[in-house]
Length: 171
Image (cartoon, rainbow, N blue to C red; front, side, top):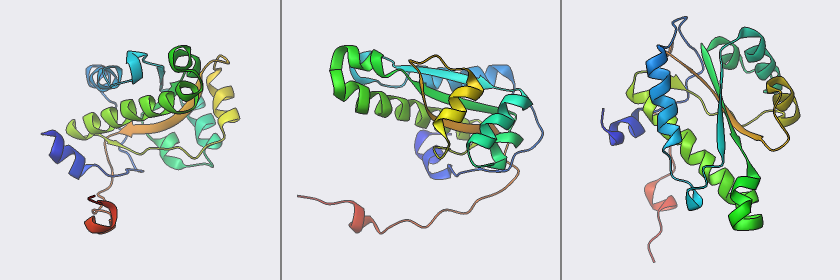
């Protein structure tokens, strides 16, 4: 699947089959995150792969009991280390670049997943303190997003988008 097709096919999937993800497939997706662009090539990220029911349940609770987090065979939590970006870019690195960088890595993983017939859903609505505790994170890491990953057990139609002219301005 080419990248344009993957972009057009991507949907937020919230229901998954009880089918394990081959380790090689998971590694391919994580490698796509690792090679994402980052400001100054600082790579201020850590990717936590969660497979245990206990930890997935804790993450699900931190995210307002979103069932997809408990149902998917894998949940990937993307963390930023603000000081890695801040060491070069000061406050802008801590507050913006590390977030942009992790977002680029997340999108790479999501598109890679689609190209491998897997589904994902970007989960940003969660209680950060609870997620940190569930993962036993060191103080330097901030969980930015988590996403369930698995084989879809649902089909989603294209979502309604704003008209092109409303979002693309030419000057």
